[in-house]
Image (cartoon, rainbow, N blue to C red; front, side, top):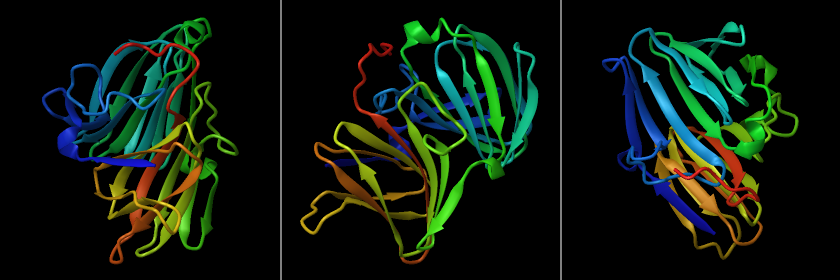
Length: 257
C-alpha cells in the first residue's frame, strides 16, 4: 500500500474577484501548481471559502460531472436549464454537464464548500443532455457505528449516482477512535482532512505504511492488493475527512491536462 500526504503548500491556490473567494486546490487545473494532477477520473478538487457574499457569473461546462458540497454556509445556483436554487450546510448540488450548459454560483458570507469534478467518458458524456439536481443534508443517509458518523454522498444507497466510477463519504471519527474503509486493488482513496488530525495506515499486524495528516491536508492511498485503510483520530480531538474512492485507471482515454 502507498499512502501519501500533500500539505496545503503542495496544493494549488485560486481566487475570484478581488479575493472575495479564496481556494486551496488539492487537485488543480493545468499549470496551477498542485502536486497532484489527478487521481484516476477524479479530475479537480477545490476547497473554496468566501469572505463576503460573491457571485461567480455565468460560465460554461460540458462533459464533466461537477459536485458542489457545502461544508458550511449557503451556495446559490442558476443555470440555462432554468434552475434557480440554493443549498445550505451539508447539502450538495450535482451537474452532469453533458452536451453543455451555463451556470452561475453565489457563495454567501463565510461559506465553505468543495467543488469536485469527476471525468466520465467525455466523448460519450457530451452526447447526453445536461442535468442538475440538488439534495439537502437530511436527504443523505448516515449511520453511527462505534461512535463514527458516516454520511454517504455518492454511490450505493446514496442519492447521488454518477456515470463515473466513484463513491464518496463524509466521515467524523471521535477523538482516539478509528475507522476502517476497504480499499480494493486498482482503486484509490482520496481524502481531504476537513478538521482535526490523525493517522492513516494500512490494516494488519505487519503493516508498515502509515502517515499523519492534519486539517487541510490531502491524502491519497493506493493498494496493489485488497486491504483496509485505517483512519485514526488523535486522542484529543475528532477527525473529519471527506473521502472519495475512484479507480486508479479506467478503460477510456482521460482528458489530457
